[in-house]
Image (cartoon, rainbow, N blue to C red; front, side, top):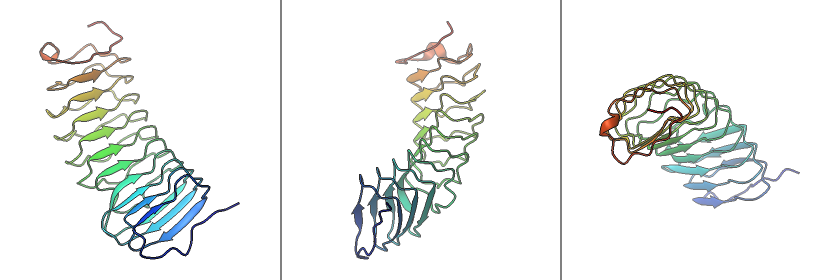
Length: 224
């Protein structure tokens, strides 16, 4: 049985329809600001809104197709735990927070310059696009990533464990958390102000600045 939502008033600005049995939706709601349609059985979602800064939570569905028309931009997009292979049909990609964890995505489109948090773990990513200068939190663990572009200067938390990284670029002085365990790494860059460090399951025998570190949590399979 297919369940749909239809004939909703155009004046709606917030729509909660989580935890139902919805299977596919095409929503034209020009004033929509927040949409919560998580925890359904959605395999297709098409949303159109002209409001500034649309927020969407469509997590925990079975989405294979996600299409968003939002000229005013998407501030927050949570599409984790679906079956998506691409986000190319999402123009004006999330300008504040993007969570596409646990999908089947093999590449990400260009990221907006205002993105604050990127959560893309448990996908099939081999590389990441250029990281925006506003990024503070990056979680790309459990992918196939083998290469990083330059890390940006505001980054506070980097979770890149369980990938195929053979090297990590210079770390910004703002970084406080680095989780790089289970990668074929042999050396780390200068750790600067890192306070939380996990490099277990690597080949690391080179840690510049190790003696200067304070309040650091270390996990390593190889004695230093």
